[in-house]
Image (cartoon, rainbow, N blue to C red):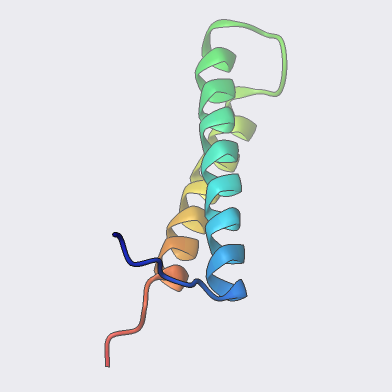
Length: 70
């Protein structure tokens, strides 16, 4: 029988934030690729900047959710 691990509210919220940021990152990445080939939507540079910023924010959230090594 597997042992269930209780997660704190902080862990649950960080997991949800990571999921939302990951989804937003891939949506933004898709818009960036689409903006190369079409003129519908935001410009390529706006999409590329948002993609880079979301990548940094996502990586920061991943680091925040990892337990600290002391």
